[in-house]
Length: 245
Image 1 (cartoon, helix red, strand yellow):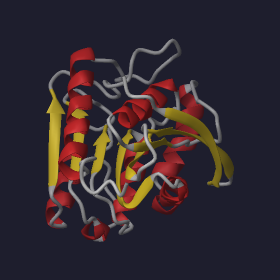
Image 2 (image 1 turned 180 degrees about the horizontal axis):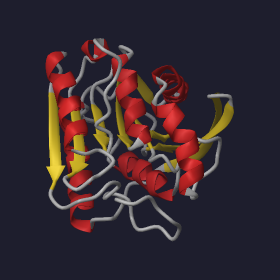
Image 3 (image 1 turned 180 degrees about the vertical axis):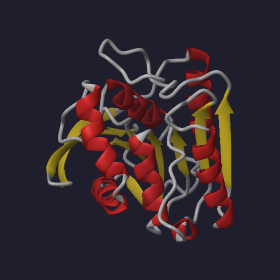
Image 4 (image 1 turned 45 degrees about the vertical axis):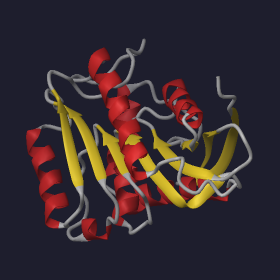
């Protein structure tokens, strides 16, 4: 089995000290990087394990933080922080750029070859980095068919893949349609995968604290969504391409 190494990284963003999780593949050569964004509740072992899985596939992966090291298990507290954040593209971009700087500063990272993968709020942040014109190889989101400021999607320079549950009341059909219309009008290479019968955050294992209505795990679709993420990265950010050893 491939030996990876991990470490905690602290960095400032949004007036907080963020605590991210960096996972490095075996070896000493430079590898493509993946910025991994969590759901609105914040960074948890779920995202840390996904970063580790990406490192095992050969990527330098940074699972970034949203709330200064905190996991917001109380839905009201989470909404009180995330709703203003989601309505403020500049704040989202600030959080994303701070994490991106950490990933790029890692010597193992090929800073010219980076993708973002995000869930919920973390996915919305990845989309905002694209709308801000960041040079990315791919943007993948689950539960984040969010739209941006008019015209800014034209700055996205990479393929965009979005996955969403058909029964997701937080990202309902009207929101999905607005997102795809934005991508289409901007000339983005976009794809949308709708997972039949799935709710919001269907990819996230069941948690032992209260959750918002319309949230629920769907094991089969969670596995499919992960394969779709891996396939997106394999297409747009292959690890075999110019490792710079």
